[in-house]
Image 1: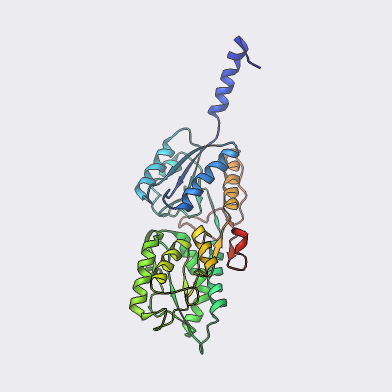
Image 2 (image 1 turned 30 degrees about the vertical axis):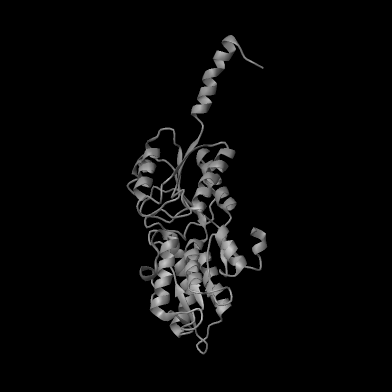
Length: 340
């Protein structure tokens, strides 16, 4: 039915008032170059829209920290923005960028990666990062069965030093692996164990490949002779891809490739698991993470406290974060079919 005349004019202010009051969320993701973040950016946007929220979505170029800082400032200055969801590049580089949001009491949700060094962050939506490390570390032990009488050689990869999440992966994995290393049941022949020695800047696949190449040459690991490499602790599939690329180039096949861990259940990783190049990955349901974000935004928009399940695990250097860590799941060839 079409409204005419005075009645139509009388309801226009109501309609405009409703539109002006619509809750708008600014979403900033690290990059559109990596398929994972490209999918997640648009996934978060769509889920927020499906739940009645307006969205302003930005990707921070090719992992460009300065661009992300400018985007956050721009959104914080926008009077139409009611909350921010940020997947940080460098979680420790956003204190100044979030100063406007803090001054305006603009709620901020740290998405997957913990934003540190500021109390401007309201909630943290993530996965149980410690559990990820536990799963990876225990998987290596279960597959390699290392003993002092039958030691196994492993190498360790750490992600990007500016990503606080990787410290959780590493510390929990090392809780399991270090006693074996100390006893000599596990041997790291490169001698490189600490994050400063094993990190891959920006989680770059090409740099993981390069580091693997250097380790093979330095230690003398070989696919058909030389020192046997039994396992590799890789925190994420993007690094595992680079590691596997180098190992294939050096003659490794599914029959002699070391046990390699991973995380994120990327399409490439699932194929590598299927073909026997990667032993496992970890599936983190994006639906679960998006649901946690939606609940946080919905609660913020209605002035209520969000549903959180952790208030002590994640300290960002300023405060213990109100967090919702979702549960990760081990994927190997035994249950791979569920994701294919």
